[in-house]
Image (cartoon, rainbow over all chains, first blue to last red):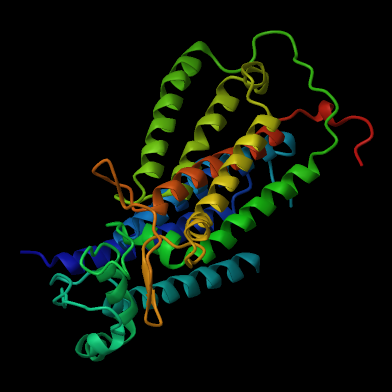
Length: 87
Length: 295
């Protein structure tokens, strides 16, 4: 049979690298709405990592705050100011 | 040049996280064999735990505190160290380390006060004409899902002593429902229904008063009986050769309540939900409401 512990560890490593890619895309994205979506993707991957690390309480806080409330506040901010990062 | 620095930073992060994960494999990640369950000894009054668990202390070393928490958060055979809660995280958050949670709630309270102070200059909110909010499909779906969200959040908060969750988890999940209603309908819909900043302030104050009263409840019982008790005391304690037999009942009507934990979770649920809703009500105010003298 496959080694379950090693599979979990490899899956967590892949998720971490994917979250890093999402953060990189969020930082270097000029259209701000897309950047918020990348940030929400990173938060989803982090919530999955917290679940795999056996911390369900933290995952239960992280999902509503970082995927629901925080992107909502940033999108409201974008709608009141500019929608494109100028540089 | 900026791209090069960004690329170097990302490579450093990747290597650092890989190192962290491979180190974590030796310490925290679940292993293939289950957790070792040491035999629970028959403890009498007055034993120091480190003397009784000497063998386990030498085996577990730095994880000795984790061993104590996992063995004593629900342990009816040793009532002087238990919190009567199968959920170890909630027992640690509200019973063993209750003062830390008190300060965290105070920090959240001050943050909401700061946001309220910034929005002092609201004159009057005029409702514009026409159809406000999103389409009919979105409004119907929001009507259904916001009720479901509040139900699940209440379940997370009130079952915090049995399943993962607790007051803050349930409160932050319940704060998503007013945000959905604000987005799909409009701010004026909530004002017409009576959900205003003042009502949310009252609910938040009721939650915080509930936390304070529950923390001092054992003290009031002790004053009425003429004995001693601690602040944030949940179950009877044994200190310096004397028993402090003041406690909140762990079972009510045959159901497990875990003493003060259920009341803490309920109060924190209301406080956190009302706090988040205040911030969103202030953020969704239009710019024209702040015209005029604003400090």
